Length: 536
Ligand code: ATP
Ligand code: MG
Ligand code: MG
Image 1 (cartoon, rainbow, N blue to C red):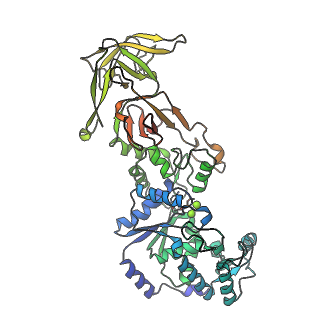
Image 2 (tube, rainbow, N blue to C red):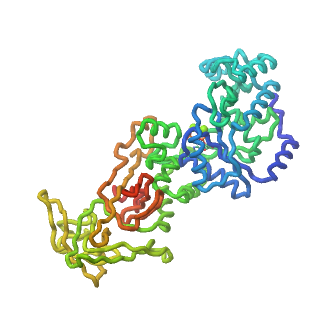
Image 3 (tube, rainbow, N blue to C red):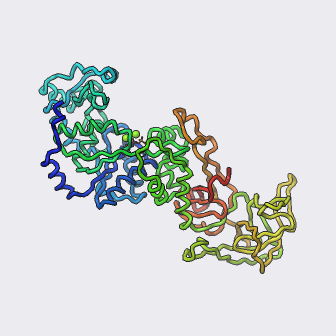
């Protein structure tokens, strides 16, 4: 094999060193064929993180060589997600911006005898690879290859009737050396290059060459690309270009979800979820809408580190643990009751109200305070009341006293039920001088004569109840992954909140304002419960 003798010459390395100044250069190379998911957060953490730690730089490079699957919408959302996680690309590039250069290199490859135009069908190519037999077109002359490749470029050959193949070794034990495709014909406009090209380079051809062109020093990729390392090096070497170092790491997998753009697209297209940012998905937009912070996702990446062990599936609980770590010290408390019971404080003056002071974040002295109104009518959570008390019950019951958090003790004197026995109102008295009961419940009230704010709450469960999903993943979708609560009342803390604002709803969990909110009705997404599995 003539390529065995081609080495990284001192000249190539010197030229490379001159452009990089000896600094680390990496790239994050998504294909713009979908929205980024949390697996990509790991890739970014390594690509951007490694460069940053070493005083180098990292490109955001769109690997855009499949125009029929790619779009500007995906490009925009990817740029957005990269920024959201706090990464700063030194430059945003596109594989397509190198199409001219890549074409010239293909011509050079033909001239060096390392590529040929092949007319085999996809099935024939597959069979040849399996049986390690040469294509009948493998040994045509350089001149003929140049002419046919030019015909391909000029649109003179129909789609599927010719491809440019790299001339590796059809008998090589590694299938990636068996004459991979370099170019194929596609009469399809491209989101960046428009209709300039009707031939497009393959991933295998493009990725290594653009890494080399951009003077990437460390090309980090996931383990499934390990087998392609040989062909990566081979192509660069036969063209006599600078060769980056390739490092592989394990893909991130998460329990209860799918991490693959192809699968996520299916969930979106078949309307299992409501769009790419449906909080039940594993896209970064979904996590963001659900109320996740970029810090919590980066914390997960930091926690799991770099591993080369394959098939490591991270428990979803670890992600939520990282999330709570971050939210605990950041998020203002609010009180919300989901299923309210009206409570009338009979010894509280009818037309009066007061403002109760609440610490924004009780364990952080500097977090400030806010006030919530308190008057004769308050609402408590239905499951914080029982007709029959027992020693372990923390809530209110007939003749029992509890503390309304941040306010006063109340004692239940009378229970009003409707014909069906449902509790519709409680009559209580409050003790203005006493706020000492250990049994404490949350509540919502309003100024005298006004009503608390009604809000919509969206509760999310896993989209897949199973931890690990097999090939029949699509049939395992949890039909009860979204529950909408329309009866909830909120205290004044949440008034005027904007999409992505976050709160801790006392005793329940973390929530964030959804973008479906209107001035008339605020909508909140449950980000996570306060503690693991509290509800189950
Ligand atoms: P998908 O199968 O979801 O489409 P992909 O690998 O095709 O993923 P790309 O857009 O090509 O997605 O990926 C950009 C970078 O992110 C690549 O370096 C890829 O290896 C990496 N990456 C993709 N998925 C994961 C994952 N689950 N964990 C870690 N890195 C990932
Ligand atoms: Mg890909
Ligand atoms: Mg993919």
